[in-house]
Image (cartoon, rainbow, N blue to C red):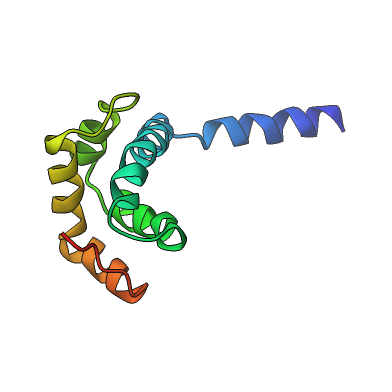
Length: 104
């Protein structure tokens, strides 16, 4: 029984792809940057969904750029990056499906 648990644990650890883990961490960091920017344009009930649409549809390069702004106030470059990602076809479709319009 104990050997089976060790084998299951080994398979579970092998399933963890370092690239996926890094992407997930980066997207969580980007989330903390995007949320306050989005909150300036939509109501509190929509900011979570809008943030998800933007972060989920950001490229790896976009996520890296956003994550670099963790812990600092969003400047004009950060706001421009968030709005550019929001205007991408996939993010725009997600926002439209949720009936969210970022008024700029």
